[in-house]
Structure formats: C-alpha cells, structure tokens
Length: 567
Image 1 (cartoon, rainbow, N blue to C red):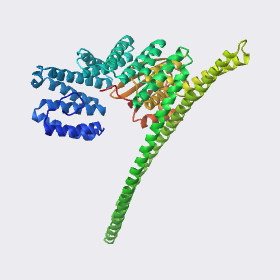
Image 2 (cartoon, rainbow, N blue to C red; image 1 turned 120 degrees about the vertical axis):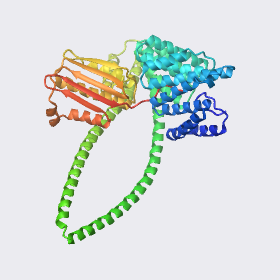
Image 3 (cartoon, rainbow, N blue to C red; image 1 turned 30 degrees about the horizontal axis):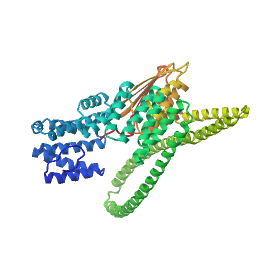
Image 4 (cartoon, helix red, strand yellow; image 1 turned 180 degrees about the vertical axis):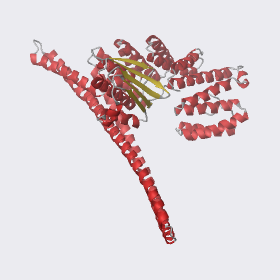
C-alpha cells in the first residue's frame, strides 16, 4: 500500500499508483509547482475514470499542495470536493467492517481539520471554530483521530486566546495536552504547554505560567532536534518573563539560557546562509557569462542594423527626399527625447523612494541591533552585578557598608534606564505580543491631558517580525505628526485585516493642513512614510483640509510569519 499525505487508501491500480507516487514524491521534496502540474493532469484522468477512491486520494493531495503554498481559497475548494466525494454511493456502501468504518471516519476527520486550518490561516475565526468543533464530536477510535483532535484543540485554544476568552482557551489547551500525553507526542505537548503558559501570562497568573513552562521544558529537555531546540529557547524566555514578574532573580539565569540557545541557532542559520550565498554566487556567475555573450551578439546585430540604416538614408538623400527625412527624423528624435526625459524622471523618483526606504531600513536594523545589545548583553551584565552584590551583602555579619547599598541602587536605576531605552528603540511589547498589543500600548503612552488617542483593533494576528516593525513605525510616525502639528484633542487608530492586507485608518480632530503646501515644502516625514509604503507595495491616502482634521488610510500586503499547526 502506498504511503500518502493523508490516511486515504490508494487502490491497487499500478498505473494510478505509479503516477500518484511521482506526484507525492515531488510534494514531499517541496517541488510544489511540478507536483501541482502533474497532480492536476492525474486528477482530470481520475474524474473521467469514476474511480472515487483514487479520485479522493489525488483531490486531497492537490488540496494539500495548495495549502502548503498558502493558496487557501483553492485548498478549500478541493477539500470541499473531498467531502462531496465521500458522500457518493461508493462510500455510503462502506460500513460492513471495522476497516471500512475507520476509512470513512478518518477521512472525514482529516478533511474537517484541513478545512478548519485553512479558515484559521485566512483569519476567518468563526468558520475555523465551526469545523474544529465538528471534529470534536468524533469518537477517538484510533491514533489518527487523536492526532487530528489534538491539533484542532490546540488551534481552538489559540483562537479563543485571540478573543480573550481565556477560560475556553485553557479548556481546549488542556484537552490537546491530554491527547498528546496519551499518544506520547512530547514535542507537540510541549508546544501546547508553551501556549497555555502564555494564556496564564496574559491573565497575570505568573505562578501558574511558571509551572506550565517548566513542565514543557522537562518534556523535551533531552530532545536535541532543531524544532525542539527552538521550542526550548522560547520556553526559557517565557519562563524568565514569568519569573521576573514574580521577582525571582533566577529569571536571569533562564533568560541567559534562552539567549545561548538562540545564539547557537543563529550560528547554524548563518552557516546555512553562507552556503546558500556561495551556491547562488556560482549560479549567478554562469548567468552573467551567458548574459554577456547575449549582449555581445545584440551589439553586433545593432551595429549591422545601424550601418544598413545609414546606407538607406544615403540613398534617400540622393533621391531628393533629404528634407522630408530630416523633418521626420527630427520629430522622432524629439519624441525619443521626451520619452527618455520621462523615463529619467521616473527613475529619479523611484531612486529617491528606494534611497529613503533604504535609509529607514538601515535605521530600523540599527535600532533593533542596539536594542538587542542593550537588552541581551548590558542588562544581563547589570543583573549579574546586582546578584553578586546581593551575595556580597549576605557575607557581612554586621552592618552592610553604605557604599554597597548605594551601588546596588545605582545598578537598579541603570537597569531600568537601559530597559526603557531598549523599549524606546524597539518596542518589546511588539516583539513579544505583536501589533495588537503594541499599538494599544503606543496609544496609551502618547495620550495625555491635551490629546486622547483611542484604538479599534480587530482580529490581528502575528505576522513576520520585520513586517510588524515596519507597520508599527509607520503608525508611530503618523502619531508623532499628530502630536507635533495637529493641535488635536482626540485621535483614533483603527486596524483590521482584509483581503490579505493590513488596513490602518488614523483620524484626528485637529487643525488639518494644506497638502499642496506640505508636498512642496519640507514634508520629509511624509515623504519617508510614502517611500516606505511604496516599497512595501502598499497604498496611502491622506485627506485633510485646514481646520477640518485629518484622515489617513493605509493598506499593506501582509507578510506572513508562519501558518498554524497542520498535520
């Protein structure tokens, strides 16, 4: 029997089996384009053959390919077709044996999980919950069903956490943990424990969070696979966060362990990047040689063409058409010059945008590196010095010298300033919890007795870290402009996800401004923001008139971090 990407059975049809295996091998190797091309051809053949068992297998595999490439609309289309195939008479007649029953229930469970996860990745939470809840009703008759339910419950916990429905989130996280413990999947159990600890952290239940993180660490402490190592680093970091809130100084030990693990992962990644760059260099060298030869051939061609053209002009000259040709040539040259001038202006505009964008990127990278250095190195050193002073104080049997207490106070004050500076450079709330919390935190900090900033943020999730930093900095720059220039009393930040884009709407009731004057004067801040949005392939609209406030609309294509758990 051929192994598949699901629990589907593949009929012992040697022709289909050979073709299916070829598609599946391409899928496993990550060659999704080739796998899809061959898979769709096989799919069309099986639709004509009316062999529904084979059709079910290839339809599911095509859906999985679309899912892996984040084309969730197409994956949903083929997963729904799998459900329709399962309703056909060929499958309705199943049920006489335990194997037949397992076949149907396993396939239904697998499809419900896949559909739920596709909706999860499209941020359609209600639809995702609907299919995950259908899966919850299935009896846990075998390991496959338990696996599917464990993943579904873990994702349900994440969905309810996003809704701040912490009781439900905890309930489903514990269900997932119980199943993973039963099937002895320690890595996934550790992952869900990490998520559960984050829920307790969000509730302010730091003691329970600490206990949960430690349980997750113990489960995978002897597992040195790459996925487990990354999971341990995350658990240690979260554990340190919980223990700092409990004022437990061992937090710094665990934080340093997290950094050491991350450093090891970073070193491996650097080595892989260097190998990849070296390979790419070899490929590019071959390409450049081929392009160079092609360019030489083109130069030769155009040289002959130019000579031929001159000969024709000379003949026309002797045939008394010189004046007419001269006039046409002048007209063509003028048109060419006009087009060239337009192209030059376009290049200048694009170059200026790229230069501004590169400047901003450089600043963001530098700020992040400085913040990481302050947070990871300087803070750790100050904390270590503080611990040494505490140990020194315990060695004094009598009165502790005043200088030690003062030194400890200075170190504590320095630590706080370093932490504040690190947060100013790059928001730790953003890095830890994402745009949802970071923008609310930003609005709270910028609000004062003269300006009240409200937020309306709907269903945001975690995205690629660099993308989140760029969006956050764009919003921060607009808020800076409101603080400096608007004289507003109230402002509103609205954010939501729509059509795979982050939509940001910022409005204020301030004095507004004349856009024509700003664009021709010193609007460097606006130009920087426009350059950033342009390079992110986004859209910016600013509506403002004097004494009537300002409305800003931004749309930015989402850069994904990673998809939900999917098996």
